[in-house]
Image (cartoon, rainbow, N blue to C red; front, side, top):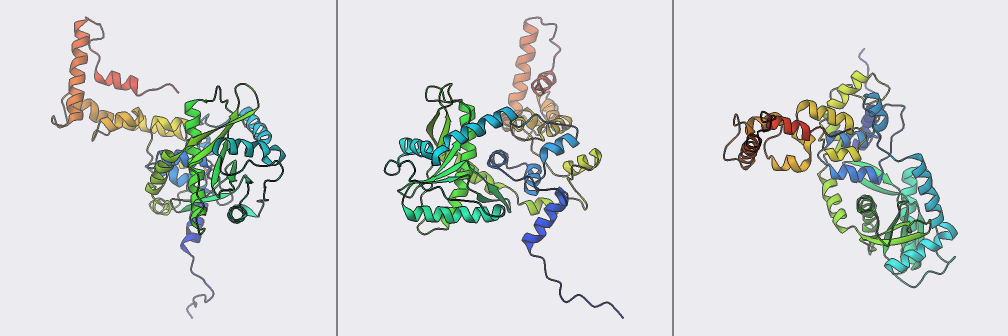
Length: 399
């Protein structure tokens, strides 16, 4: 007698099926690596990289994966800097955040001067990131209705990224008496004579823009929607002391870029659906198997990845091996138009390939001719050098 189908079987929802698939990709018994604002900012800066989108969506530990692949990265923060940052943050938030609120009022205004000890500091503890996100949303709603100063210490926000939720934890969010919400970013690098290192401020701005974007999602579910300020509060040590000082950073540009780039990301389930059966990124697998799994997902490498992604060394080696023009930088890639490999570039420069009417091809041939003339004119023994020598030198930055 044929077996009867089970009557108690329930269809699996798309969300459950995706979570199950991502768990298989990561390794069934390995905890997911949560997405933070720093990773999201890097992902938004390179939305064409399907490899990073999938690995981050699945919660794969990219640091451990890079080590298993034999291409470890020094990317990350030192333990000393981490401890120094925690100590400075604790000082800024001491006494119920009195100093932090004073800096917020002095820099951004938003109501009467806060009275020490009278600001609300709600308890945001809850079970799991989903519970904390719900508790944060409730605290924000209550603070907006109360009409006073409120400090949310390490709230939990959620942002949908390529079809998967990313839970984000800013240093703080301040609710002003006028109803506005401000993201607070606390950094341990110094602010000397009222200004800080531009590159570090830029990184903090991109990170804060991710928090502001997630905060806008919470505000949009309220009626009326409270305003999320486009100026975030950056708090740093003043000069060479440990005293805090603050500056307002306009993140409207970063918000616009992040919003647009995250919208361009291919959905994680679409990327996962194209993988061969049995693909896994479990870092305990043999290196050869992991390499094949990683290479099955397209990557978009650029030199900027070295400062933002743990897999940058691995991807750089593959890009050089394949002769990809992206290994020379996005600016050069943009100038070369349809020439996508170094081989194509060299052939075009030598006149062996390429459309002469293409501006990129014409520029390459003119540059190669000028270089030959210059070397011949000075009688350099290196006159036999080719454009390939130049590209090879330019495309091999020091590790």
